[in-house]
Length: 100
Image (cartoon, rainbow, N blue to C red):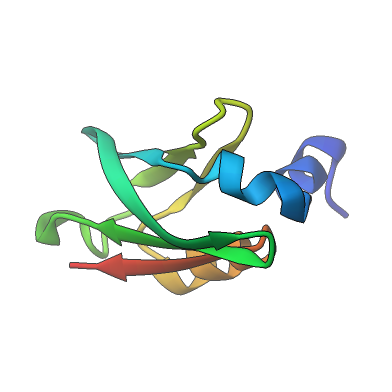
């Protein structure tokens, strides 16, 4: 059973808030801080996020932190398991594409 903090982490963002939350994102992966993630198809139906990551961090167990445009949301995960990261974000209404 998830505790309250874990449950909150996966609460879906209200659709009307998606364009504001995902206008732009900053991403921290391990020692790489404030990388810019490109957003596309931001609408009240969902959002597409494109993240380019340095080749040397793919497959490592670095923590991923995505900071939302409005500074009210923070999304976390592990870069080592991109599929799990994508599934977690999808539950929030985010389609995450990772480019290397």
